[in-house]
Image (cartoon, rainbow, N blue to C red; front, side):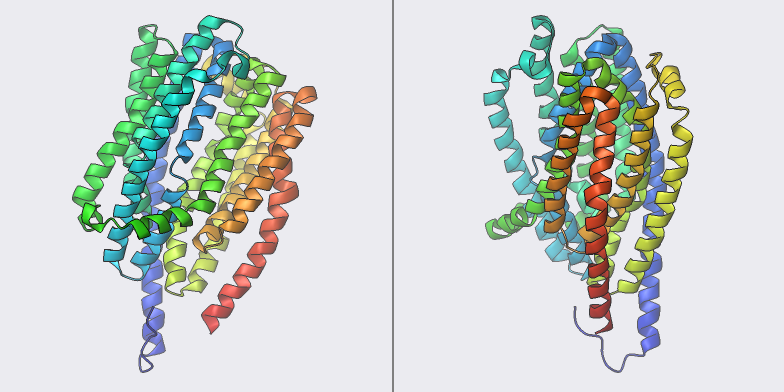
Length: 459
């Protein structure tokens, strides 16, 4: 960024920085309000879908369904981390007022993701038929096992088909116009709920349920991309003329660390679900999944703030507005972590009643599971706030190594705890890995990073 003219009054610089900071916060607030409304619709839709599916297929088969969703969710990493790398790159380009560069980045990101989606889909078609579902999920009968393969293909296919279109969500976040994304997410959730209702009314099987669940996000991604690049930011619309193999390779390389983070984020819940299924049975998977859904509300609410703050931090740091970035980061962490602690304290004694009211299923006493989920949820929110700031600061490779260590420690603890404790063991394994490894490492890294950034800003 060019240096400011020496004859420019310092007050003018301060006024400009203050104006930019106020605009960032205004956009963050708009995004939070929109995300709260949209996510509320999406969560309500998810809860209704779970209740409908649970009553349709029963608690035991729902354990297989939950494990299948966790496993096929791994295909969400097929973008190789490019989406998050694109967010950082576009946010920095816009922070430097270079819309032409931002459009080039978007064009190359879409092209690469389209190619990746096709390649992964072809590989999936070749290997899916060979998956030993009976052995992998410990399915007791061949009829149920035969339904899992087609359902997995539909769920994964929906994720892959929407991959290049979902770029618009990262671009909207980078441009600090992410308040448009939740509306389309809510529309997708409504489509999925309607589809699940139709399927359950008609007595559909796993494949029909998978089609209903996958249709909503896919249609929302396609419609959102066409609308955003057509109406909101046509200046960032992807163009084939902007595709450059060198830039595409650069985006792929920059997304490598984000790819590792995505793998870890998706692999851990899937691996825990499989461990529970094999060591404790489908009933424990159902308990863990249903209780976990309640506690997931806190990280999802926290993400309303963290998601728009990421590009805001990045843009502020690109303009050397370090004081605003540090001040906002500290306030966001304290407020969101405090709210999470209060919410978890309320949820621990009421979770079993809420699950019974929500699904009509009696889960039995789950106090140890609820406490473990509450502790883990608070740690997840706090460490996610730090990770958001580290991502915006470009400190990604170190976080990738830390995430690998977290997954390894979580699974090691889970292998020891699930046998005697069931679902509670999985919850405490996750919380233990966060408290023993992630929190102390993040604290040390953050302290050094903030000091370096203040030094650069002062210079």
